[in-house]
Structure formats: C-alpha cells, structure tokens
Length: 252
Image (cartoon, rainbow, N blue to C red; front, side):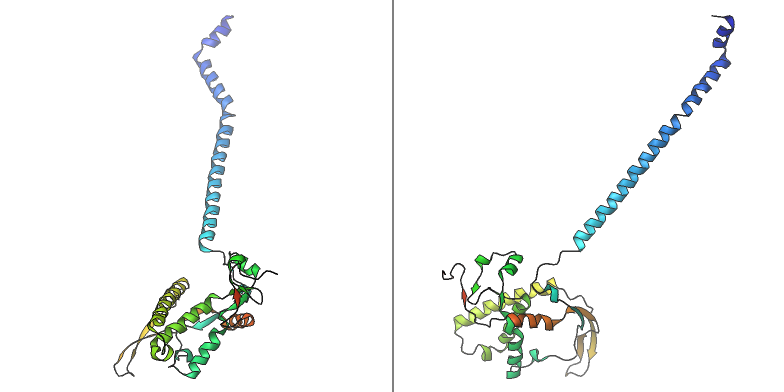
C-alpha cells in the first residue's frame, strides 16, 4: 500500500468524512422508510375510526329502528294528531242505555273476521292448526277489537245488576276471570304503546269540594280509525260464525 493511501486511511479527518458519507448515503433511505411507516400508521388509524363509526351506526339503527311487524292492514295505517284530553266524554262512557249499548255494539261488531292462509302464514302461524271457517278462510281478529271488547266487558262489571242479572254464581266467576284476563291485555297494550304526552293539573272550584283536576292541551300521534273499522267490517263474519276445528273439515 502506498504511503499516501495508508496515511489517508489512518487520518482521523478522513474517518469523520467517511462517517458523514455513510450517514449521507443512509439519509436517502431512512426518510423513505420512516415516511412509509408513518403513512401506514395513519391509514391504520383512519381505518379503525371509519370501522368504529360504521359499526356504531349499524348498532344504533338495529337498536332504535325495529322492523315493523306484519299486519294485513299495514297499508291502511294513516297517522293523525289527536287531543290527549278531550273536553267532553263520548257516548261510550255514559250510563247504561239503549244508546250506549247500540254504540258499543256497532264499534265492536267486526271483532271476528275472515282471514286467509297467506295472512296466517305471514303471522308466523300454521293454518292447519287454526279454526277454518265454513265459508272458507280462517277465523281471525285484529288486536284493537279484542281490546275494545275487553273494555266493554269491564264496563259491564260496573253495572252487574243490569248486564249479569240472571247469571249463576259459576257464570259470574267465569266473567270475573274474563275480566282479569282483560285487565292484563289492556295493561300490556297501554304500556306497549305508551302515551308520553304531558298532563298537568288545574284547580276546579265548580265541584262540591274544590280539588285538583287532571288536564292537558297536548297532542298525540294516533292512527286514523275509520279505515281500520271499514276494513274489518268488510271481512266480518258476525259474532257467532260457524267453523271447523283443526283437522275437522269433512273430506271432499
């Protein structure tokens, strides 16, 4: 090795230059690797954030937006606003009379209706296990008419001397059991479709004893009644239809 080359290798200044040179060579590589890692980290974070948002939205929709259950009259449902506290009571809350009985009879007349196999199946039921009407189809009822029927029966218990006048004790006990069933049915329905309108209290001095009275000027969302009653009326089979028990239809 020449003396100049040897001197150059042993020269501390040359070692520093070599170190700087190697750092300079790596300088072109290290920033690229660092940048790549940096962007991968950012992408991973963004992916995590987006995934979290999408999952949160899906969970929110699934928990707050339930699928509307099947009903054969779903297409007839029309929302309307109604006063939650009417100033005057209707005929349905009057004392027993022919007018009262006629109004209730007309209201619950289409309680029993003709329904069809497809509707029964859409209701997650097997038609072969249901009562089949002599004229065809199956015996059915809309829930609201069952509840109205229950309300009327409960009102009769306020005047047992009129509506259950000639009942035996066993028949009266049956009616009391029927009433307990109706109380539970109405409780479940009221809590299911909770009326969340705000009620307030006023002071009434017009009575014999001045007292607080419940009142409200609020509105609530209801469904238009007339289309429901008309649809059920078009399918009514009366209150004493003739039907076959499951599997009891005559052959041929």
